[in-house]
Length: 229
Image 1 (tube, rainbow, N blue to C red):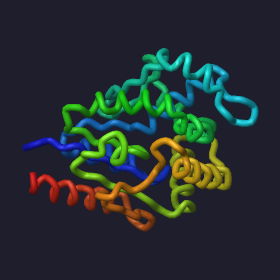
Image 2 (image 1 turned 90 degrees about the vertical axis):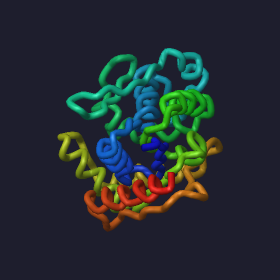
Image 3 (image 1 turned 60 degrees about the horizontal axis):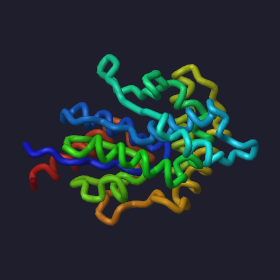
Image 4 (image 1 turned 120 degrees about the vertical axis):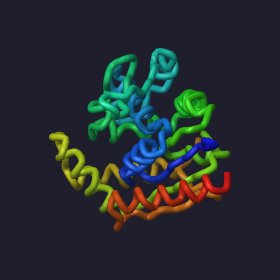
């Protein structure tokens, strides 16, 4: 069966990663979490002190050290995990501190250029499911299946809140909701590769859907595309 490229874009905390991971596992594709890549760069910048007191980024210092940032994914017990310079950082990149700083990092042109190049290299042989903000518009505009996921900000904040609590991490609903809405604004208004629905993407509002319903919906869309290839 011919392999395709599947691009899943959408707002933060929409469950894109869960959908993408499940689909990749079901159909035997490689899953790549591009959001984790931007989070890893953010973590690096936080650790190195590349943020000013007002939250802006010390871009000169970050650009000078971008070549020192190496991001990879490895399967741990069958689950893809994020590594920053060979250090497992899956837990560290999911904190609210990183979430609160990732959008300014993701808006920097040289960061996007570097990570997009890595993402395109990862998916050059197809057979991948990649989720993020600009996969269907910038990274793989020729992707055979493009999905754009959205949901109400309050529902996304609640999902994020519950996820953090389950992991035993600090969680404040109001702070999370504020962060979600701020990220929405930054992601949709940035100059380079802003978050938007590709013209040929299929939109999914999963506000009132269960994970199993989303999974079935996505599988149906995949099988419909495969039939035409």
